[in-house]
Every structure is written in C-alpha cells, then in structure tokens.
Length: 242
Image (cartoon, rainbow, N blue to C red; front, side):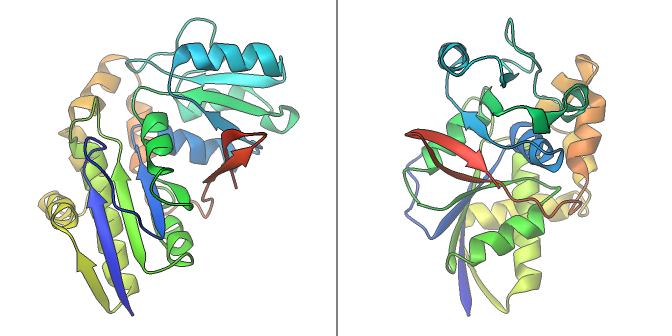
C-alpha cells in the first residue's frame, strides 16, 4: 500500500481534502487535549474566540470547565490555562466536559474539519497511535501544524517530522509532499531529539520565561499514550471525544 502523506507547516493556506487530518499543536493545545482524556475527561468543546468560550460556559453551566490560553496565559475567569499539570487540580470524571480556546490550536482544529470528516488530535505523546487511527480511515493522510499566528514554527514542524519518520517505519511506500520532506529534515537535523528541537523554538522560550518549562519537557515525550481524541459533533457544536 502506498500512503500519501501531506504535511502543512501552518494553517495559512488552503488544505487538501484527505481521508483524515491530524492536527498538531504540540506546545501545547493538542498535548493538553490528550492529557485531558488520559485523566478521565469526557468531552472538549473547542472554540476560536474567548468570548465564544464565555458564552458557552454561561449556557452550559458550572459543570463545564473553561480552559485554554491567549499568548500562553489563561484568560480572566478561566479555570485553568493550557498546562497539562493544571488538570491535576480537578477530578475530570465529575465534569460534563471542558470548553477550550487557544491562540492557535483550536482554530487549526476547526479549520481542518472543513477538509475531512475525520480529524484527529496528534502530539508527540500519541504520535504513533494518531497515525494508526488516521490510517484506519484511508491511505490519504494529512498532518496540519497549528504553528503560531499562522507562521511556521520549529516545535510543530519537528513533531510532524517525528510522525513522518514513524509513518516511514509503518509502511513500505510513502508519497511525501514538500512540507513532509521539510519536517523530516528538521527532525533529522535535531538528531531525532524532540526536546533539542524545542530548545530552539521561540514558543518554548516564551514558556520558559513564564516558568512553564515543565510543560515543554512533558510535551517532548514520545509515544507515551494510546489516547487519540477526535473531532465530532455534539448538539450541533464541534466537540472532541475519544
């Protein structure tokens, strides 16, 4: 089987219609989503804007968490930001779910849903599992890097390179676009060490300045999870479930 793998290094251009998109915002939205479900969370409602999140919270009630960030910090009155470690404060099983908005990741996730009925959340921690889930939908797969403010970033590109490398190990033949070749080259440039790549990423340096370096280290761990969240609809709203 030949797998066609398209890697988009940012969401700034029009996407192709594929069997499945995997959205990557490794620092930190898709890592956070994966951790949320690992810890027993039931559902995430991703929205583009902070005001949308406030409105949904008002409509749905106190049994929904508000989580996310703007410029790496939680907006006012949010229950938690975008750090997986903040989730330990909550018994997620007791909540109906969470409403989430981030600077880049939730927007990329919603954008990808216009180009496939199958959209999965990917990060380093579930990289191989996400690829396997996508392949169950067909052999025409896309990886969308959320980037930052529609710009290509080292962190997401390196994570996409990790996924390209994993796909090469999983299948005999792979048809790779230029974005995929660039991502794979970045992965090899850092000697297949994601944390080393993150050390060069401006977003990671921003998180370090904020005292959130532990988030960067957590996000760099590879294939620690079999949890693969996916986008669906719930009561007419975009929703992430497992």
